[in-house]
Image (cartoon, rainbow, N blue to C red; front, side, top):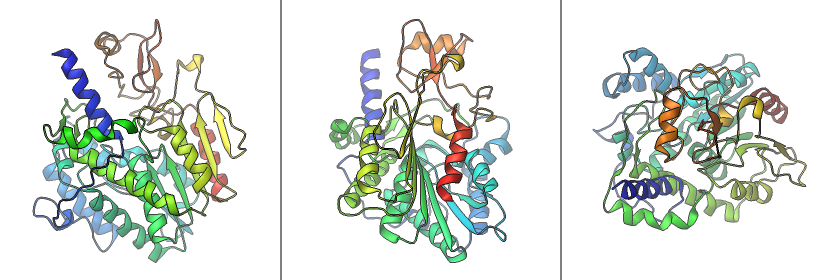
Length: 386
């Protein structure tokens, strides 16, 4: 039974990260028009915040006594002075995540002169079962809508995204244009295991996805299958567009060599062949080195900090982040299928930090949820904008 469970989890994990060939063919009205959801396409961002808060207050399955804290961590938000800023950026989170993904990056960008908006992708922030509702088109629709509103108010508009969000903002740039730059963090251009993508149609016949106890205030632990398919559709669409188009605006890509979710080599290849601005930068957290001078390699073998590798999410957060930082309140102990290691971590054993699934003799690993080079990342973000 335990072996079967592990195989099932592996299949679900594969589905959740791959660009599968199963495109969502359901003919239904956009989710914002559905009686099962709320109208998130408002005429202004302030109205969007109000309607989203009203939805979450009623529909979120709160998992802690502090409802206000949970609500704040999952709400979209804005930072910076809209009337005084000369440039704006829209930030879009990944599958299963929330706008809290940008709790540090948004502050850094606002301090650098940006007016910052973040989005909550449909199906997120409330309860995992709501991820059975949206399609890729719903996610692309909200990104296109609020990016267009920003373009109406600002001459200079950048877009940023983490994981699936990186796909969505890049697709917008390719299809809609009029974007001044991109900042992409662990973008989900291609999965780590593309050969397993053909499992998606088969698995979808039997199960809705992976369910787990929800313990993280800022993201889902469960993985509904339709959410994975929506991600998959975004990756397929992106790669199709990049087959025939290139991107000329300045772009920063940040990713970890040990990423367990996306294929960093595939991302690097697309960066070098399809992104052609001379000021582009790629920050590579890992051990490989490259002849391309636009790629900066930073080692993740940091014994003094007990860091073994980077992870999919680690580029996003500063070391002092209150939730995910070095002394943050949330430690992600479930970092592999090793139940003994997970239990030891939860019981206070000394841990090292890595990507999901990394193991090393004599060490217990939790997820690396913070960026040892966050200050350097801030500098690079400022440089590429200039």
